[in-house]
Image (cartoon, rainbow, N blue to C red; front, side, top):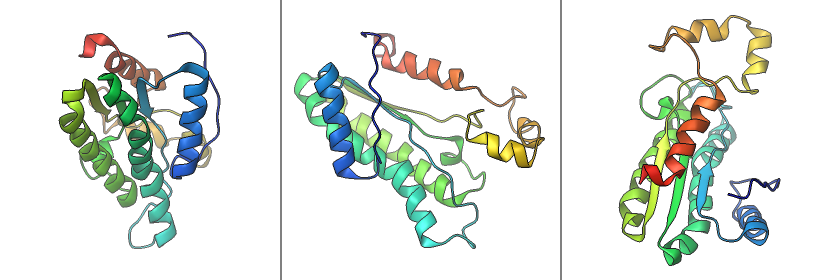
Length: 182
């Protein structure tokens, strides 16, 4: 790792934008050897009251983006017979915790991750999903401003009695990206 980064803006649910994003990364750094699919949105809360466009948004960002980004980098990984795909899923993909569109998309992501691991493992490509619970990210600030006790209520769901921090997920991803995880 060079310790360098490249900031790009892309709608990862749009194939042409994914292509441009990966092209820029490859131009700057060479072949993509590690892909972390971490884009997420949770706009639709209740199936009975959500509209189709909210459903489509949640599925596009949380699932379609994983398909597009993985599909874009897989040929190079297959050619090099090495690569890592890490998908940031959610406990919502494992059990029902509300938000039907988000949960369905994250369950689909977990299933896709398993498929990638089985189909492309023989190419030396590892695919894993991390399924965290609530993580204290900036997206929670709006909810906290409306309901200052929301995170305290959520802590009761978790055996450790706390919500997660971004570093919790980052450390898991770093391990999965490392050779120690092989």
